[in-house]
Image (cartoon, rainbow over all chains, first blue to last red; front, top):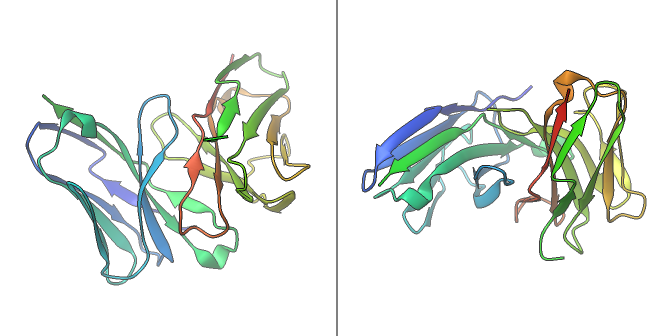
Length: 113
Length: 114
């Protein structure tokens, strides 16, 4: 069973601060995705990373896939209250054959105005 | 439709009751997934359809859980003889083949078994 561990589990910061969320596994993934989920809603895809060492930027969000494709990080610059939510990483094992994703437990981010 | 639609949004069931949860995916999305999300946890895989074929049901926790997608569009997740541990949010997601574009999730059905 592949597991993804996210840290920290909870994060409360002031508006304007920077933060990094980590997603780690002992398993290799074909690709890794980051989602953001708000209360009462389903997760919304932010980014997919496929190549080891890949870096993708989405406005103030920077995503990195580890060289060995076992870990990933999400860095937010100058956090805003609208960034508040549950951030989930999810890994795909193409060997499983069904495109199922293994999700971490998430990082609950609160950005205080 | 524009997004993945799930109904009902909330369901309260008495222990032992059968429930049916509906998912209407994005038109043209051949892949459909069901996930279960317990409080404070990430979603956990239940089952996967490609068109009408159920290709993976390895995540279904017991034989009380059954899913179908008879015409390759709308899907129903049925839970028989519900138990308290079935209380969770049930998420449906659809996608194009492969994972390049990621999943589009519905808002989920929150099931509470009392």
